Amino acid sequence: MLQNLHIKNIILIDEIDISFEEGLNILTGETGAGKSIIIGSLAVGLGGKFQKDILRDNEKDGLIELLFSIEQPELLDSLKEMELPIGEDGELLISRRLSSSGRAVNRVNEHTVTTARLQEVAALLIDLHAQHEQQTLLKADKHLEILDRFGGDEIDRAKQAVKELYEKYTMLESEIDMHKMDETEKNKRMDFLQYQIQEIRAAALCDGEEETLQKQYQKCVHAKEIIETAGEIYQMTGYDFPQSAAEQIGHALSRIGRLAELDSDLSGAYDILHDIDGMMNDFNRELKGYMDDMTFDEKQFSDITERLDLIHNLQSKYGKTISEILEKCDRFEKEYQELITYEELMQNLHDKLQNVDDKLREASVYLHNIRSTYAVNMCAVIKEALEELNFTSVMFDMQFEQLPRFTANGIDKAYFMISTNVGEHMRPLYEVASGGELSRVMLAIKSCLAYADDTPTLLFDEIDVGISGRTAQRVAEKLSVIAKRHQVLCITHLPQIAAMADVHYLIDKTVENKKTITTIKMLDGEASIGEIARLLGGATITENTIASAREMKGLAKGTKIY
Image 1 (tube, helix red, strand yellow):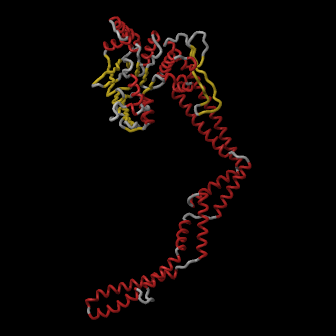
Image 2 (spheres, one colour; image 1 turned 180 degrees about the vertical axis):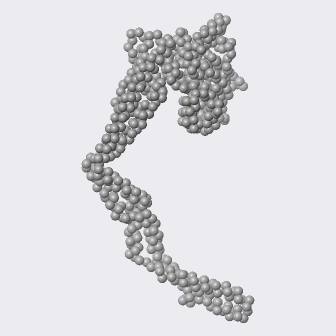
Image 3 (cartoon, helix red, strand yellow; image 1 turned 135 degrees about the horizontal axis):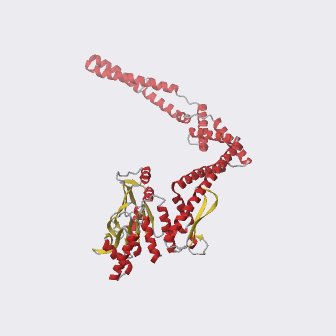
């Protein structure tokens, strides 16, 4: 159940904190007091869309927090499957912080989640019936969703089986379409594949070949420059050339050798120059060897260039690397082999499709039969609920039609049929129901689903629209019945429904420091009777109005089923 709602810096709300109770929680207030703001904030807190102008003060963030206590083991298991942290006491805190930039930060028990995940969690915890939701009953495709929800796990399992088979079916259809071709197309494709395969295989490519050839190519391209420059360096340093570095060092070594004989202090300098002479000798021998080995072969250069051109041509057609080209060739060969056995391939695919078609048809019929069975039960429960809601001569049923082809949701098109008057033929609900009738039908459906699912909290925003008198009393009684199994939050303007409250809250609008703010407070017994009197009598509340409100509260208490 929803234990607490905390709202801060949202439209007319500066900051409010509301603690809710089990049973029927009724919220009332003057028109414009901010009831819709509270419901809208709650919807936003559960992952709904919002505009950045929702903030009361653009300089501050808005904050909406909802604290739930969860007792149902199935619901706890579902939340754990989402890998969400749940406290040992079963408490779960949803927090949504809204910034003036229009962005939101969503957290579940301090664990940051996406908006999509937040909405998944919210759907398990609370069923929000806003004023516009009853209009969904005017959409026939929503009726089948209601039936499937009523059927619970049994229908879910049947739907999952249909969905999986449908996905296989569509995949096979796509594969058949992809391979489908006439004899001319097939032969043309085979000829082209054969050409591509032969072109690649004839090249006899090897991984790493291009890198080796590129290195050889660069060496050939620069061979002349390398040979000329190496020769110049050898002339500068070699012993065979006058005035070369080696010759000069040799002369200097001879002269310093003589000086070292005359003065031993120069023996160190002699040793250094002797080492330099040896290193110069080694250098020239290394350079001479390189020059002797360095040759430029025109044919080799031509072969390297031609091979690289071939590789680059294949890369432009089949892949950036040799490895990619070879992989592409393998795929070509596989496709070629498939085309050789094309008839066999297509027959195999059609056999598989027929097999899945049979299974899908069987699963869809099975799903239809389960739905039909549940539809009888559900319509009987809804009819009974409608009678309790003052539809005295109502007939209610579900019409099934078969779709022209398979879908992931089976072959069913289904919609509600209703007759609200004696002698009137049943017609589709979306054709005949008025606003007040739709609100009661929606309540009847909600009461029906309340026994079928585990959503702990139901919220009704003006479910009483378009009704009054005895019908309003019946709606109040139905809400009270639902509240025995679920926590119910209900915004209303009818005294009959307000009198049925287990807990009564007043939403009010006041002016503080020249600013209008919305507030909410829980009413005690006498304050609740005063608010019921206001709903009964409007602006002028007399003793008789108070007495009527007190009587209405007493009658409501006696009507409740404990």
